[in-house]
Image 1 (cartoon, rainbow, N blue to C red):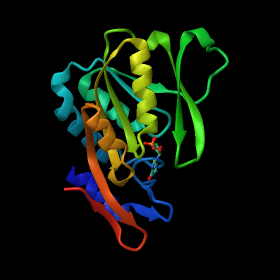
Image 2 (image 1 turned 90 degrees about the horizontal axis):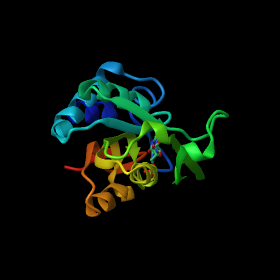
Image 3 (image 1 turned 135 degrees about the vertical axis):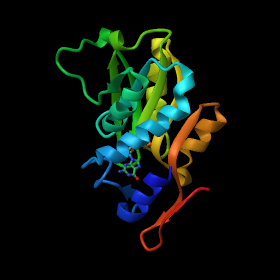
Length: 192
Ligand code: 5GP
């Protein structure tokens, strides 16, 4: 998506450990009109798939998920990274995701009551790197007996391989921008 790619080139910042900072418009401050256009683009790609729910993960996937969901007219469910006191274990689906960015393993969880068997789920997230977070969300969809209709990602870091592995596994994955390589000195190069 050209609008997003331009924004990344103009305002994104590559930090030394292979992390792309997009804090100014996507995952700290949010440029709502840009993210709204991204949501519209995702809708155009998946509108024929009968999506009944969008699933994301807290916190930075939520903005894009909500602006996307308004086009589908469906609800957003976001996986939490910690349990609140009113959530009993038996009421939850849980999975685990290792974060290479933060070098920690997170448990991700959703309430069983918000994802039912037979629902058609679109997973939406801000970044896909090694694919761990997305894989954990897919695991939650499978545990619920729901159907994975597709995965939409704002920025895929293609050089970290998670996206290509997922495509090879048959996942209908759509990334609005795929970063093929990036360096602090040379900036970002997108996949054609
Ligand atoms: P994965 O599980 O695919 O390896 O990483 C996905 C998660 O890690 C994303 O949800 C995002 O929070 C974080 N992440 C991975 N790479 C980057 C990056 O380059 N920049 C930012 N801001 N977050 C990243």
